[in-house]
Length: 474
Ligand SMILES: Cc1cc2nc3c(=O)[nH]c(=O)nc-3n(C[C@H](O)[C@H](O)[C@H](O)COP(=O)(O)OP(=O)(O)OC[C@H]3O[C@@H](n4cnc5c(N)ncnc54)[C@H](O)[C@@H]3O)c2cc1C
Image (cartoon, rainbow, N blue to C red):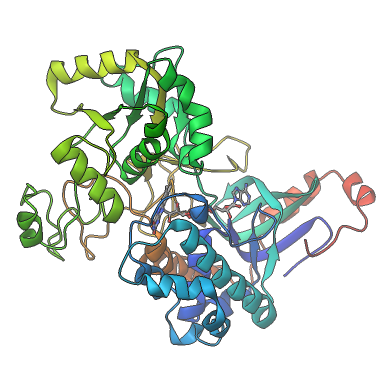
């Protein structure tokens, strides 16, 4: 590993140590790949004061999987010694007790953060991995042989030159994406209405939701939810719970495609009187119904209640619902009228990845190509730029990016999005990335990262004089 105060050269950087970045590190430990990566220099960079927390635990909803799915991410002989302290952890036992039911995400977040802390401590002590918390990745310059990362720690800027960057900085919701989605159906958010992202709303307490939205309810305006995903149904429940008591009687739901529910089998779906398309909605590998795109657990219960009784859960709050795709003129008219009557619109139309500034070596900006529900990347999460050029060495698979469904593992034909979730981060998704990173590190062994010299020359030499004591560890 080359190093001076302002430049570091290493093999691989994990940019963002949330649930996806940590899944990569866990799986690298389990597969034995971490040792090789660390021998060529492995760094973890995260903007938060403590790496390994991520956002999952901040959502005030239940998980879309049972507790055992999270425990399964920790269940591996290679990790057993590292996780011994979890035997005494209340967070661990809380999730163990909910092995067969969906736990609150706050509790999942607590367990995963504890497990992340143990793994990070282990890889620092055993393999010399460097963890830089409170460090923001601000820009990445890509070239075929390597990447140059610009990072900022409390106002001190440094450069890291690496062969591979595993980049999962979380998700964001651009209001422009909501406006575009509505514009496809000649619909718009009325000028006076507030737009709130589901990401923000699902982090709010009932008191905060009331503070934000009671003025809308009091003014007799609609609160409209746009989207048909898990988040949309979680939002409906949190809104109804918080606002019914303040007089809310009705919520509006506008979604594009049919609301799809998950079932373990066709038989189970038929028993529940759920109608599905045997060609489009059944996974050919597992026989599950709407395996990738169907609502599960609590969101499924809310979805069923909305479909059958036009109500949100057990509350008395009614739902006015319209499906835009195949809905014809009538659906469009309803949606237009309800939007016009709305004082607040909650955006549940998916996520885009948080990204640093990306550019080519000649400073041309890079825009990553989008696919429905995420990024247009290959099976290893390696994306394309605006010209269709594959950006080798860059790998994304977290929220906002995702991966296409793997035909070997199966999915339903009607699913058009990208797949992401904690279990995938710890298993299939990160495994493909680990293999790609290892192959790349092997290919480039013993060649210096060529970007370094040109970039060193462009560095303002005065920075060295200004920051002579810049610490090696943040
Ligand atoms: C409402 C909701 C509910 C979900 N429920 C589930 C569920 O039940 N089960 C499931 O499996 N999945 C669920 N997911 C999907 C997914 O597992 C989570 O979104 C997960 O948190 C995504 O992990 P991530 O690492 O991609 O992002 P995050 O967890 O958000 O982590 C991003 C990390 O990047 C860091 N970072 C951000 N910007 C920078 C920067 N510039 N430089 C350096 N670091 C930076 C942050 O500090 C953070 O640590 C849910 C998603 C949402 C939105």
